Length: 158
Image (cartoon, rainbow, N blue to C red; front, side, top):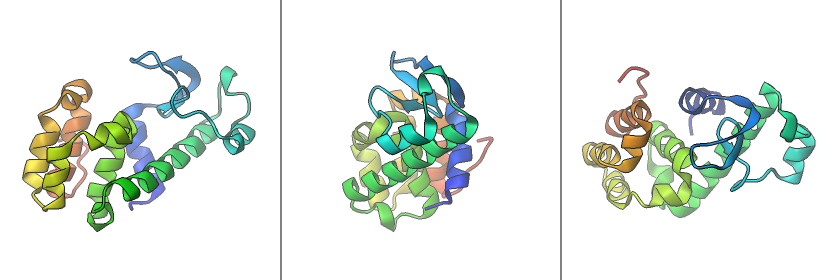
């Protein structure tokens, strides 16, 4: 896996960082770097560290939650995608980024993309990523992810 700092910076680029609670485009209560409180409530440990998030959190708390989210998603992807650990770290990142945005269940709906990845057919995987409602919704983010899937390299300006 790419280091937490690099993944965090990329997710902040894609998600932004908001220290006050807000409602995302799907009407879900969210804070920090896309942490959906409605579907992923804070653990007891996170509540102790973050404190009363209802009135806002610090940037350090947002990064703490983000790191926990990345670790959780990484562990879920290792369990749910049998070839996940066989992928290079950049392609693992691409799936982490997509799962962060769509949820692991949402990512798993990309059956043709995942099948192509499992066979090392990176060009088809990238095409499947771009040929989706996800790509229509997130725009440049999907283009960046598709390039990572195709080439194994992250490019800020695709």
